[in-house]
Image (cartoon, rainbow, N blue to C red; front, side):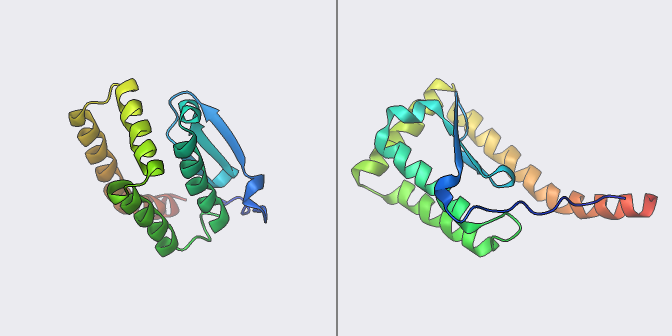
Length: 142
């Protein structure tokens, strides 16, 4: 029988969220562990560092992945993306400079970036179909 582990308790203060730096990391928040993982080179861009860290802390403030309404996450990401693409202040300029340097450092060409995006999108789409099918499959086999 498959069981789900109990939901992890969330700290009341998102500042208790652990922040870990790793070389070349994709900046993200890990809901299951209440940990923010940031690229260590982000420290070289103080404004971008604060902006990206605060974005990830917003994810921590939202609660567990199970409790976060999809609309809230989409709002946060859409707001951030709009700032990234259309913002013209010094902080956003530094965020863009950081990501440009990261793409160059990671040697990701525009073609490779499009390929990775398409691959990710396809995997997310088929996951929507495969996940419930696998749930049914394994229940029938039990």
